[in-house]
Structure formats: structure tokens, C-alpha cells
Image (cartoon, rainbow, N blue to C red; front, side, top):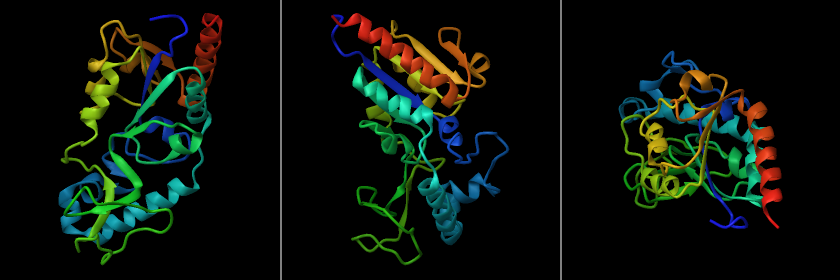
Length: 238
């Protein structure tokens, strides 16, 4: 690679980066998400049992996302696009990366600000305002549901994410425990010579020995790293 070629930087983000914008998650491992059992609000079985509860739950999450704002980590990652060929693969269902200015974002687990058909996943509808109610139907007459991937469901974007990671020159992981499958397996798709860095308050504990650990919250660890890379990049370009 020549010094003036744009390096391919792939960023994998998890719940930690959104939590710093005030979006609560079930990351702490108590099996609850906003006081709801995961099996009640984030599984196909929960949807079958009580779709009204699931719709209310995601309406509340949607309202939280609309109130939230991108934090310094989101903004710093967007700034990287001035000097790198950046792709973001996120486990988060919010739109904070896009609002910060990132152009290429793959949502592994879907997007809460979209609805989709419960019968045909190809029928997807944006939700710029409001939510989903029982009786809201797709063009084929089936109930709309949140366009999110629940536990036990396939991850349609995983193949695209794997393809992106295999082309990485540099891999940055932010705010994830590396415990959610299949997303955690993405690290192993990177080329053997691809440097990998994890930014997380527990990075040293979570990282495999071949991953550089930065023990810091996303909003504290990512901006100085981004500034270092951008300064280094400017020095390389004649």
C-alpha cells in the first residue's frame, strides 16, 4: 500500500458507546432491559405471547433514541472519514453514528427507527416520528414489528459485515464485551496482519492477547486515539 492510499478502517461498536449517550442496555448481564425480562421483549416467543407489550417497549426505546445525542466518541469516529476509508459495524439499534455524520454504517441488530413486516422482512418502513401500534399493517396486510434482530433470530447483515472486516487494514472495537454472538466472531475475520484495538473500561480483562487494550470509556478513549491517527496520517502524506 502506498503512503497516500486511504487505509481501510473498520470500527465495531457495541452497547458501551450508546450508553454514554444515556441509552440504557442489558449489558450488565442481569437479564433485564429497562426492568423487562429479555425473553419478554427481545425474542420471537415474547412477540407471539404479547405483541402489545413488545410494541410499547420499543416505542419507549425509540423515544429515548430521539432524545439522545451523539457523544464525543461518535463524533470522533465520523471525523475519521476525512483521512480514512471508514466502515462502522454496530451492534446498536440507534442512529447516533449517522447523526454524528458517519456515512457507512452497518446495523447488525437492526434499527429501532424502522418498522418491518412481520411476514416479509424485505418490507421496511422508516419511522421519522411516532411508533408502531397493533393494527398497523404492511403492504401485504401483516402486522408491523420493530426492525430489530431478536435473540434466536438470524442476523441478515452478518455476511456483509464479515466481508467488510476481511478487507480491514485496521480494526477498532469500541464499547463491547465481545460476548454477543455472532458479532464477537467478527474479530477473527480480520486479516492476520491487521492491528486490532479495543476501547472499553474493561478492555484489559476482555481482550485476547493479540488485541491492544485501552481501558477507558468510549468518549474518553476514542477522541485522542482518533486525533493521533489523523495527525499520523497527515504526516505520512506528502
